[in-house]
Amino acid sequence: MRYPISATLFDIAKSVIPGGVNSPVRAFRNVGGDPFFVRRAKGSRIEDIDGNIYVDYIGTWGPAILGHAPIAVIDAVHQAAKNGLSFGIPNEHEVEMAQMICSWVPSVEKVRMTNSGTEATMSAIRLARGYTRRDKIIKFDGCYHGHSDSLLVAAGSGALTFGEPDSAGVPASFAAETIVLPFNDPAAVEAAFARWGEQIAALILEPYPANAGLILPQPGFLSFLREITERHGCVLIFDEVMTGFRLGKAGVQGLEFVTPDLSCFGKVIGGGLPVGAFGGKAEIMDWLAPLGPVYQAGTLSGNPLAMVAGLTQLRELENAGAYEKLDQIGAYLQGGIEIILTEKGIPHRLNRVGSMFCLFFTDQEIINLESVKTQDMALFRKLFWAMLDKGIYIAPSPYETGFLSLAHSREDIDFTLEALEQAVAEI
Ligand SMILES: *Cc1c(COP(=O)(O)O)cnc(C)c1O
Image (cartoon, rainbow, N blue to C red; front, side, top):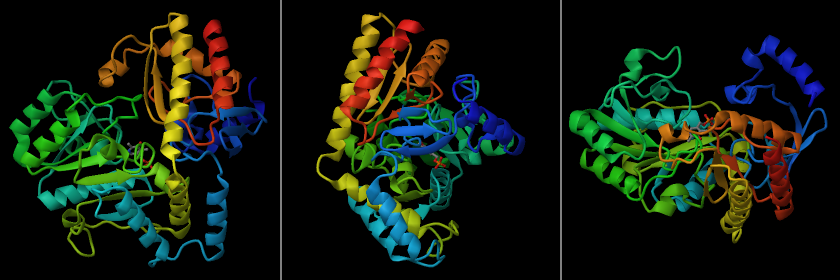
């Protein structure tokens, strides 16, 4: 057995936690098996409670962009903790954080902190609805925006129908306010606006969808969305919870030169502590309570430890060349994987931007959820376990993106590529 102590603990966990986990993907259902429990993590490595050590390509699903447990962040949190863990009234770190976000992301004039990405997107949707006095929203199939009711909606069966609940417990009447469209399909977006243009409060998307593998927008798609939402008085929301501060100082909007009305953040801005944020045009943000009629709140929002962890992480990323280094290590990994899989004649697509990457076992071009679903799941599953046995931890699902950090060295990548070469020979 790979990790007997973890297996025993997972049995206990299952008796007191539904499925043994506090977030479903951790249960390894997509790869068929039980998860390991982590004892500690440092840099690019993660160690389970059985003592196995892995090179980690998940980085806690994105936040660990400096690597695990970076000294600067740990020290800053220690110092802050001595002054108190939570106050529930303003602290100076919240202001520094807001200033930092506004200066890095030009489209953000004002920002509100939350405790998760889910809260950020949920609040941005409510704000857009309050501001436009409209109820309907558009989302894209395969984009994930957290687990609030309006956003846990999947595409309906017809070409132009309202969404259907993507979870038990989401009322059909809520899902009926969400229009779900295929990504990279301007005609579908035009048809939806032609039919419901006056009723659509917001269009929300991951500008680089990274929760169904990694999908990239086709040239012109994002600027098309900017133009059509503007024309219909619809709030354009970029969910950059994954991409914000990971792909560059201003996320995808900084790379693509498309300016949303509102943006959502999370993951990297928390430095590993629970943080989210949403912000954008002051004219819209000022509709939030206490200034405006849209209610939104949080006992722990702007928590001093979370702010200090996030700020310290962002300051480290300000160091010259951080994003270039991430891109270089990403390119090095990508090149190595391509060589191995091409030599073995394994059909694949490898999408990568900077430190985010996703390997699909398919020969189809990846443009939307449909194309992602063409991948060979069985092959992925075999690869996952073969890699884990060789000390490489990739996401336990073919629908997840991989993440690199500044702690990943060329030696880590060489070790990973050797493992891949052996794994591919075995599976
Ligand atoms: C992770 C994620 C969320 C949800 O954030 P949580 O902190 O898990 O609630 C929302 N949107 C995107 C794009 C994400 O990647």
